[in-house]
Image (cartoon, rainbow, N blue to C red; front, top):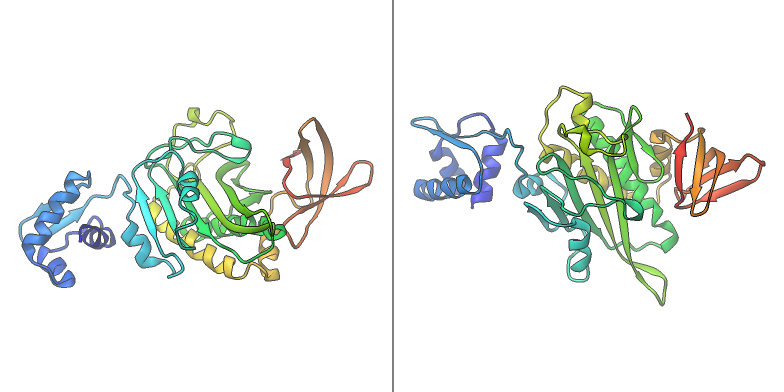
Length: 317
């Protein structure tokens, strides 16, 4: 009940909603509304009350609402859970992947052990970003799994454009950039059935820096936040909803050429000079194409062509 009341207040944030209208909408008593408002306040929500006007949520702390997200996303998303804090949403979802249905989503206000590719730390500040994981159980061959990362990248770019009007780009393979600054990262982790070498599940981890963060926390000098580039304030709920809805659409069309066309359109490495970083070697190359599996097709300085499926690269400016 308290989540339903919270959803109504979020939909009318910074405006008073009468207790009578909330009670009528939810078909409960005014006493029940009052008790649940008290519980929400104890949970940390700032809710004002005024005689003859009702209740008003002051959402300056940008509270996440699982009910709001559920009400505004596709029915594909079966379970949507919001936590106050966890070590890693990816780790939590992987732990229960065998029993959770496809489309389960875990979102946390804080991550204590966030990480990116190759185990690199991903800095997370409470209430400042989006830290979420989506469980998939795709019926696709293992060699198509990179398309899921591409699907997530395209969806984040489209969602940021919808919500903020900012046209970001994808740095292959899993980062979202704007003006040479990293705003978001994707970490896909798979469970593999060894006998058939097929995917049992895929956990799509998405981290987006949304609100202003003390840039001294970004030790690599590359990371930044969406709000560093816009005066527009939007709640994380709205960006989460947009990302999830775009993701489901793109996931349904994962075998459609349109996904790769969009991935190429948003790429910031296509037709660029890059440096490829391997374990004990680096070399320069030129990006000629992105193939239908989202692999990078490059030409080395000696003229030979190579297809990359997961290497680390950097753009040579």
